[in-house]
Length: 436
Image (cartoon, rainbow, N blue to C red; front, side, top):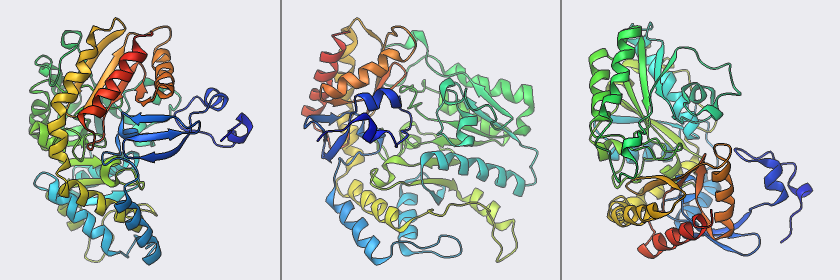
């Protein structure tokens, strides 16, 4: 199958060097199990579960059949003032595995939309409580919270926001948790919990009563797997409780088993007030995200409006789309049927040791990992991110897909991976990195 630059020109690709890609495209024509097939017939093992969203492996016929059947039965139901059974079923399945008392689920279409929705929920909650003066939000350096304007406003990765200057006001940031002293630490670093005191300082500086919510990725994912130090998330939770601030966990990457538990909240033993999620919700087979909230938040917002009135003026045309719910329902069933969250936890030790075995390579700056999520950060050459961008391309042609952000390659095997698949990923990583 041949492609030319002109035949690809009409598609403006996201997060891609379009001119470079179209001159030498990397196209996937088939995906099955652990592997992609490229347009030249090559086999590429998926080392990042797509974009961290395909833990069940590619081409699951159970999900495809359910989506097809749903489209032929009921392809679309307007989600405003109407409903269909699939969304209520999926909300129940999600609520069954979220930590108590997080039991109410609002469906969206992506992780980015889940963040903007969580921002609005926080505003609506405080307004319903008579605390509309809480107008500030706290995020972190190196944070990624999607690409809608709310997420861009919270962003701590400079390239995701420097072009887009007209963002939300009143967003303040804490320091990120990467520390030179913790390099090559598997699991949670023991140093760095004091970084949580940035939030206490912000409460002193701006007034804790002016802050609506703190947004935290339990593990900062897209920036390169920054694992929280021991005690860090617990201290953030404590400060939020002291000042009546909502704690939001962005579980778009960590949710649905990535850390060997249903959610990072379970893995770290810290329960937020709001959780955002997407990606693995449907195994990437249909676009979908969700926001799950504590009962008290849902009840405060809904009880603040007269009976019969719309309580929350927010939603999307495709919220809880029937086909997405069909995919989500089957994906959740498969996670439970095959004990895949537990299986991810069982494979995590082998994966972590294998990933950290690369530390002898001269080009490596740091390796970080927790559960089935890890990052190999290479020492930059030239402009930041230039080497990482080239490595992602080189790895593809060497038979491995790993998502790079800057100079960090983020490795996140599907939960159906076996030790031999981890070995294949590490061997291809070593072979490619050794050539730097």
